[in-house]
Length: 97
Image (cartoon, rainbow, N blue to C red; front, side, top):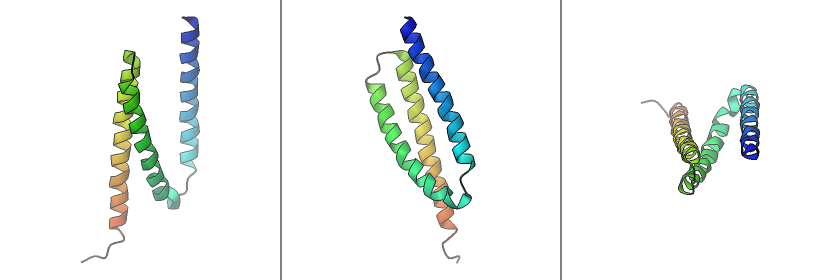
């Protein structure tokens, strides 16, 4: 039981570290690179959605099911939001009537 708690504690530490590194990296991205990086993030989150659906299908515990569902919802929100922002930015380059 103690090993299970230690493994989960290490995962929590890893997730917290990833959050801080992600915030630091995103904060230093120039605005010119924002759109290409958002397109890449959309592709990555598409993979996250598929992976989280697989995790939900293989879930043995309620926690795995909840985390998989949360990953599907957040990944979907990010993909949809990315497409909306990209569409708005592309509208700026169209000729006005």
